[in-house]
Length: 437
Ligand code: FA5
Ligand code: MG
Image (cartoon, rainbow, N blue to C red; front, side, top):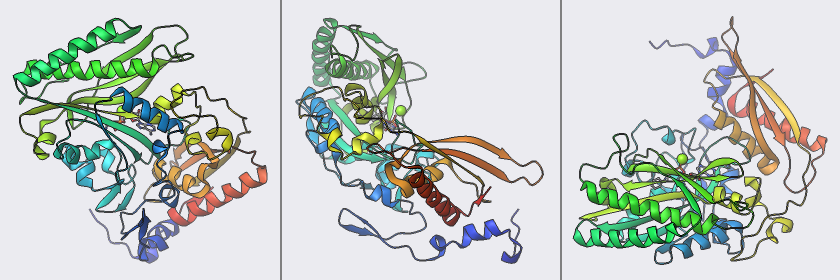
C-alpha cells in the first residue's frame, strides 16, 4: 500500500534526505581519462576513485604489482598478454553477457561504481571475455584495474587488480589430442615438485559439466585448467625462500559457482597458518563463446587477484601500501625480483567513534565506508561496525562505527584526526541526513 504524505508531515531527517542538493540539482559530468560522461541519479563514483583511474600500477615494472604481473605473463609465455583496456564498461559487458541474473547483488549501487545508469567501472576482468574471444584470441591473459564498493580493512581496497586468463581448444579430435598431450606434460612436471594438492572431483552433480559438452572433453578441459594453475602456483610460491619455510607448498581446490562457468572452482593457498583465496576459474559457459561467435570450441578461464598474491610474496601487510608514493616503499622493489618488504615504521592508530540515527531509507555499510574513503583518502586504516540497534519504542535504528585513522607514512596528530573526523561527520549529515547521537 502506498500512502501519500504531504512534505509538511514528514520528519525532518526524512525531508533532508530527499531534498539534499545532490538529488535535485543537475549533477556535474564525470571526467575520466580525458572523457566527459553525463551524470544521472545512478552516479555514485567518488573523487577518491576518480583519482585512482589511470594510475596503472600493474604496468610499472618495478612496482610489486608490475613485478608479479610480469612473472605470471612469463609463466604463460605463449599466451597473448593484454593491458590498458578502458575500465569504463556497460552493465551488459560486466553482467548480462556473462549470464548474471537481473537481481544479482553485484549489480547493486551498493556494490559497484556507476558513472551513470549505462556505464560503470568494471568489477572484474571477466567483463572483457566476450570481446577478447570475439577477436579470435585462443590463449590470452588480460591484466587490469577493477573497482568494487566494499568494507575497509588491511585486505580490502575499492580499487584492486585482476588478471584474467583463458585457453580455447577445438571441440574435436584435434583439441582432444592437444589436451591429452598438454595434460601429460604438466602432470609430469608437477609430479616431480614439492607440492601438496587437495583436489575435488572435476565434475559432480553440484558442479556439473554443460549439457552441450562431451563429458570426456569437459573432463579433459577441467583437468588442463587445474594442471595449468597448479603449475602457476608452483612458479609463484614453490621453493620461494620465506614463503613455505621448508614445508611443501599446499594448494586446495574448492567447488565454486560463477554465472559464466561450469564446472567452477576456487583455489586457496596455505600461507602463514591460513588458507587464502587467490582466484576463481572454470569451464567457460558455452553462451559466452556463442556470443563471441567462436564455433566448435571449448575453453577454460580464470581470474586472479594480484594484490592478494603480492601481499603474500612480498610480505606487504596493508593493501593501501600498493598506492604509496613514499620512496621508502617504492625504492624497496626492483623489476624482476621478489623480495621481502621491510616495514619502515608503524604509526600509532587513532580510533574515533561516530554514532547516529539512520535516515528513514537506511544506510548501507558500503555507503558509509565510501563516504569515509572519499573524505579522508588513505588516512583511514579500517572501519568496524561496533554497535547497531533499533529502539523498541520509536523503531528508529542507530549504528556506531569505529574508524581507525592511521597514515601509512607519517604520524597523525590527535588534532588532525579530530579535524578529519569532524569533516566525516559533516559530510555524513549533508549527504545522508543522519542524526548524530
Ligand atoms: C571474480 O572476479 C571472477 N571474475 C573470477 C573468474 C574469472 C571466475 C574467470 C571464473 C572464470 P572473485 O570475485 O572471487 O571472482 O574475485 C577473484 C579474485 O580477486 C579473488 O580470488 C581475490 O584474489 C581477488 N579479490 C576479490 N575481491 C577482492 C578485494 N576486495 N580486494 C582484493 N582482491 C580481491
Ligand atoms: Mg571469490
